[in-house]
Image (tube, rainbow, N blue to C red):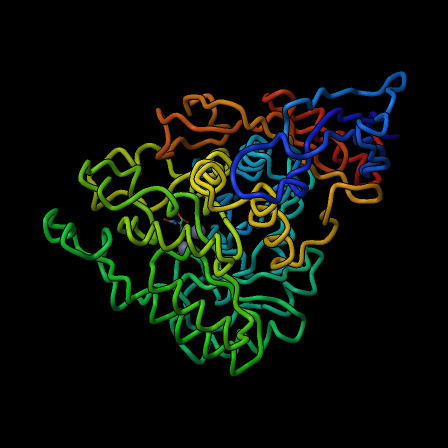
Length: 463
Ligand SMILES: NC(=O)N[C@@H](CC(=O)O)C(=O)O
Ligand SMILES: [Zn+2]
Ligand SMILES: [Zn+2]
């Protein structure tokens, strides 16, 4: 059994668009043939292109930009335990709609992803659904309680081969536990992804600490609560010689700490979310809990510093921190509402808007930020390093022309807590190809049965 061959015609490769800005006409148009999960041919149209064969699916990609499939190092899929917010199936459908072919699933589920059994279960659910590769993240501490290390070794050696560990949602606050965790993951080239938030400095915190939090009468979350943990952890990572990743960097000061650490040669990488690249604390004036997120929306100066840090390479990747919550958890008073926003379907449009169209980055850098680097940091296997013959066929095809209203129909997960509803955003993902089969076809999700069957075939199974 095999899935039909696909011929993509006339795409421009993001990797060949190395000039800053959004003009895509500079790259030559190429044809790509996909067969059995692999890119088997790539021919420029100037060299004659590839002639279609009978029975092959032909995609007209004239005007579209092709990127290696997007990879999200920070997704909350909520299953097991919070299936009213999202499931592995619904979350990976949202991922496919956003151009993602792989997602790393955060550990704050119920039960917590702190044993081999739970991470294997999450991975199996992802394999069966087939919309994206699901790589579970393991908890650093048992039950995210911050008291004892979890079964890190068992999760690393399980079928899920966990390489990323995080207590995300909570900070690993105890420095000795952090040290032991770094020592442990070093033995198998794993990484600790830290949610940098000093719990004592942020008790009851509701928004960024500053003049506005005083004015609004909301308890503040000071920048130093993030920066002090990052400073401590880069020093610990240097001492141990282990890999450290910082989740959702949100302040100008954090950028400076990371810059300093990288200059010293510390093995640290950093992520920024799309929302911290565009939204500011001013939105909290509305008391609309769609804007309530952890870490909180910061000042305009922070947003500018984060964009510059991406342009300069101090920040390594963009990660969504897709955090679905049910309507009841958001349509309520600010101080009792849940923290978090959904982000898989809006990540590429926001990155285009804030980085490429603003001249901070090229399409090639965008591909690095949203696909190549997160795959490297997570030690994701089977991910293409380029769109060329011999590489796995994980591909996103994006229409960069024009802009359109980001409406409810664009959200394909179970929850609708997006801060972008009603905004005009550029860039639409038109096709997503995972392991050689379509998960998104002409902007529409392929139906679950077809995707599950193609996934089974791609894993060598029989229908
Ligand atoms: N980002 C958030 O505001 N919420 C996340 C947790 C987290 O990423 O810290 C969640 O799980 O809801
Ligand atoms: Zn977090
Ligand atoms: Zn998170």
